[in-house]
Amino acid sequence: MTVKPEAFDIMYKLKGADKMLLTTDAVGLSRGEKEFYHYIRKVKFIPERENIRIMYDDGWEEVRSRTDYESIKDLELGFLGSVKNILKRKKYSLEEIVKMSSYNASKYIGIYDRKGSIEIGKDVDIVVLDENYDLECTVCRGKIEFKK
Image (cartoon, rainbow, N blue to C red; front, side, top):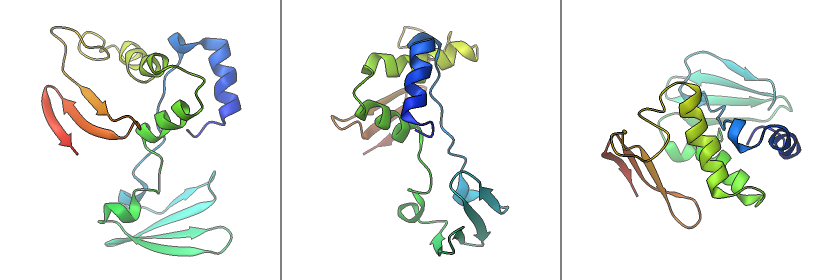
């Protein structure tokens, strides 16, 4: 979650689960072709062929392989990571989080007739999580796309 927890709590009190959308700011920093400065983190990402050079404002620098997932997976917090952060706080139910992360978004962008809930006639887009909310399986339009 990029938003401070206190700010999220205030927004939740004002809007409630029915009027909030969870999103991610993960933009594929390791895959970019242009230099990018992340002003919040105070770090510059510089693509160099198969690597990405990461230069921090405090002078520290590192180089990671752009093709090795293990090397780059922690550069950004993805959508599931954001959801897990909210779940860890134990202030919101799983049902509220599903509403904010799936149902509301599909309504907002006008695709609720196909997405956002599990109903006959809709696309079968499902993520299966384990007891720690780690990804086990992803189904997209009825086809298993990822399985642990």
